[in-house]
Image 1: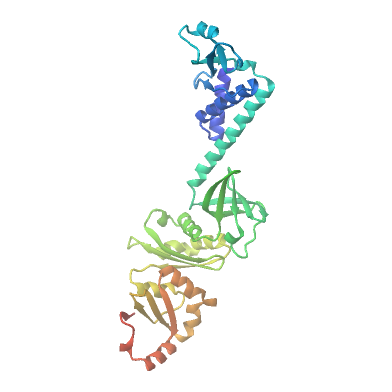
Image 2 (image 1 turned 180 degrees about the vertical axis):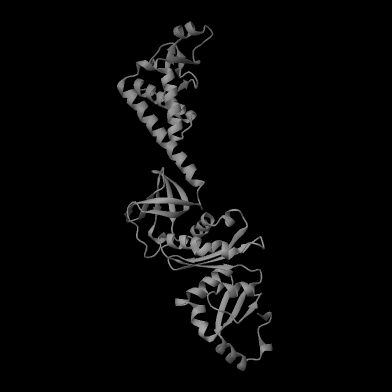
Length: 363
């Protein structure tokens, strides 16, 4: 029977990922609770379970008294002397109890304690597992939509995809498989709560890492990402190997790599541009697909004035300013875009030498 007990603990440890020591601690706590419930006492009690054999011992602390009033917390001097003649009034000793004498209610108490401790341990295991996955990408299965958001299955637990973390226009049907980004793992009274996102720029970064081996190997680096989920994302990449084309590696043969990411992101447009250490060159590339004639930079204010062909102005700014806004986020520079005609009109009014100090034109 004792061997079966240890085997059962080993099986639970393997199946649920809960340490056998935690399970034995839970069982010891349950025995203590059962003793106190069975004998209706608040005496100091400890239980010991042998980790190898499964032998169980329960010890109750008792005070040596002349006249016993509570046999579960007190022991007579006469009985104490049978254990050790050196005991005296007021001394405290431990007496072993027989757990087989526990009644049905005590057994139910023990069961409740064990179940509760196992649940707590499971929650701890799940929390630790998913806390390590913060800022990572996971495959989730859509379960249901509620007021709080869309609940998705992540394996051992559910994740919450709040509505402000969903891609605009994207539908979530039961059993759909989607990629999600783990934002945060919280401890709650009901167990760990895993908050996930479909809008975070980190989701795009992790998708690139999954699809592009050159990124995982470190040959190609993602320098910056700017995203407006469901509409457009700009990604700046750089190759540490002059023989490797960073943009080409991310696009893939016939565009297959970026196509898979676009499909995963509900047909969100993805612009992949080559990062450059020269801010003027970088800003010009960031405004892709628009062509740029000239970039004037102000290092002090980290601001840039960009000149584009007249017919490219709307393209450079983008619908509702999206292209210019994403370029600014991507580069970290303030960008003011002018058409060639607008720039020439300004030059007619202002002598080039009158530009703000520190502002220099660059191609």
